[in-house]
Image (tube, rainbow, N blue to C red; front, side, top):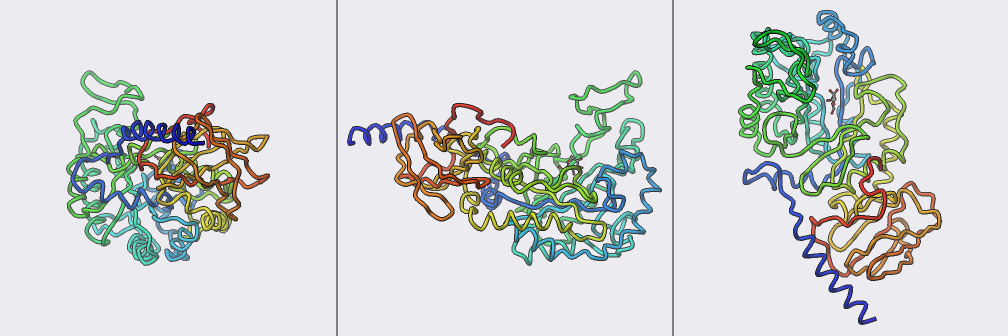
Length: 459
Ligand code: GLC
């Protein structure tokens, strides 16, 4: 017995040494960077909202582009945008019920329609049938609910030929850029504290959608992987620096050419690998299909969504889950019902998500793991047929294993190279086993590989 605990202690020391090598660091290097992202790293779960004129045709937020709807034609939708049942308190309450800690609303998507007041633009919710500053009401409601406030903003605007051909329609490109800078200023100055600016479609790589360019000797197609390299520049670095001056606590994603606070991954299939060295977030939709409203869109199953949340947390990332409200602003009841179910799951299992770090084991066929202090949470998404889960030893001593719900103690056997856990006959979508270690694990540590299926793409 003594020899065994001695082996375990030695392994623990080796383990702590190895783990000490993995260093978490913010992506940006200014002095306040680690502090301002601390809440976000604890939060783990947020709500994305795609809402705009595109909700009216109900064929997704890319409808204008996909169906090549003429700009003037599309603009008429503003006359129908009444937002009659827009109630941001309802949105915030749905997010809260689901256990989400922050929200991100599309203040302006690629169609250029702003959900806020910009006196110099005619294409805003103030000048739509709604005559309302949607962002102002949203920000108030989210803050009142005690959640962190995020805004999505796309500098690109399909109404400007200069976006597609910055080399030819230079004036138009410059006007589009002026709009971006002006609107950033509006958002940063008039809505109080904004916690997240979630950029999309900025950065020079998006210009012209990787398409045809006219420069130098004439027309040529730009290879997909080659960003635009012409004269036009969004001036992201200066714009984001200005934003940070006005909103010193703001977090910015990596979809501009400026240094970012966190990285983004998009869509279920892009959940990707484990990364506890850079803050990152997976954004995806609660329904199958587009981000913007589509009537009768199929809501993903609870198991699928918990798999995504656990999959992200177990890889040390956040999950930003999107809902697309109806044209009148109401959330789809089927989506709200699913959010409720997620919330019920969180009531029981939130301890294994909030404030945890991914690991210590890499995700694999079994599911994923998270940890905080001396607690490790094993999320068993796929129960082995014989009910016995065998993982490589952690190098730390497990003092107790129990099920997170109901606190039933679980049998386990600890050897120098393996940990065997007997799982209950349980058909839970995620059997969460809490392991209590005799010592805390370091926050950021090199993850322990598992035998098969590690880091596979789908949770
Ligand atoms: C894509 C799409 C967009 C969506 C975004 C969310 O970049 O252009 O429609 O808003 O992903 O991440």
